[in-house]
Image (tube, rainbow, N blue to C red; front, side):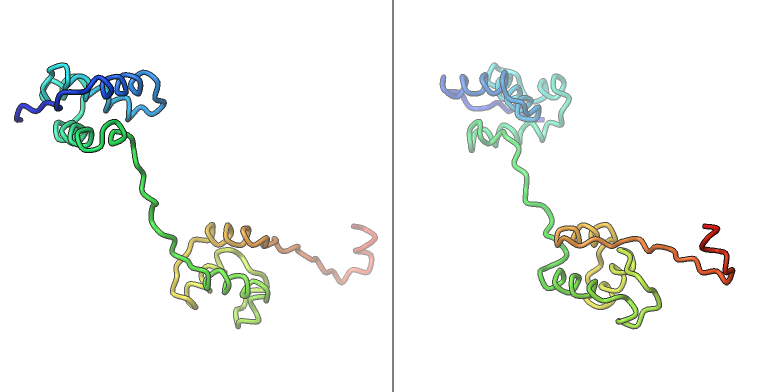
Length: 163
């Protein structure tokens, strides 16, 4: 691995690195600041690998980020994440579908379950969702699927008084 050091630090940069190193609640930022400070004090990347137990290419990337953006480049930046699978028309279809019982749509069940609803909408809209995501979307719209109550019928005329 080639000898790589961070460029010489200005007093303001060194002070900011030390402040971040001592006070930041983010462990990743502290570790990156530590690597830059050690590099500025004359430690080469192979030495930093042994001290910090991090891959050498990672340390070089940290040094490059610092040289490009300063201490701000050492903080973690998270992306927005994967976009949701569903869209507004899906939610509208979900809410409208749950307003009728499954028999209205030609299904054999009498009550909706989240799994049944997810399967029916997957066939209708080609958007595959988990039963839990369907439950959360229903909850977001103020809707809850209730468990069916079993009704027991008996031919015994004394059944109700016995109960």
